[in-house]
Image (tube, rainbow, N blue to C red):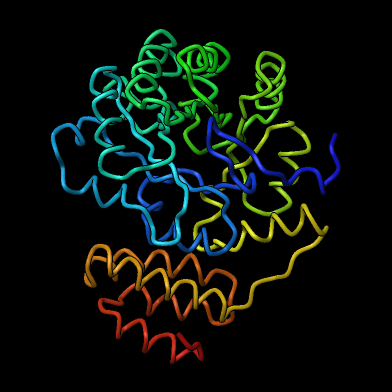
Length: 336
């Protein structure tokens, strides 16, 4: 396989040129503009919004606009949409482009959550390649030259591992990139993801069309995990999801590992500074009270592994205002 210095490299998604191949995945309930901004600041080469309902977009739901909003430092990003109706997905794509000017639209064909799957969307599309083809083709036509990527799972369950058919359906529909999270819908986020499937997909797609990048997701919790996925699977890029929660530093650390062979550990103060910046960004986006409520769990994630972290988290889960966070940080010796 390639040596580490060659594992970090620029990548293209259609007509988008990206400086690196380490991305933030679309994480439901987490990948809002505030968090994406922090990830960009700490080395993410590309970011995806959390999934946005095509039906909600067509019905003009105000909340979806917040989810899709570009972060101030986000020069390029992708908006992920989900749905199973090709016409709705096409209309949603037009709305996304009109409201955001995003550089890429991503189709969610991987979410395992029952309320999404029962509508025929998310990972239900992975076991219905014909519908996935129709959805992809409709979105590609509506996007008018803006690249469309598709994220899939390995299949519905162990008896229906349809990732290969799903991948070709998406590519035949005009997708410019494909991402595989090699778990089945039945696995959810349990068990281990099967990276051998990602390696197989990379080989198949690269042989058929070398200009189509294949990205990998699943069980990436450290820079070493990222390096290993790139080495073992030959994929073109990686997406950190849960591994970036409370740890946006993982992007720069992985880049440093790939380019220099090592990386620096992050100090507790650096963690709290990033959390504080995320709090302020989220407060600007959705208001102080809801932001403070949401940031309780995020501050808890940032504080994992630091000295007196348990006691600090006991206070953080009660924080209701920015001043509360300020006082808690000061109490444990952290500056903003």
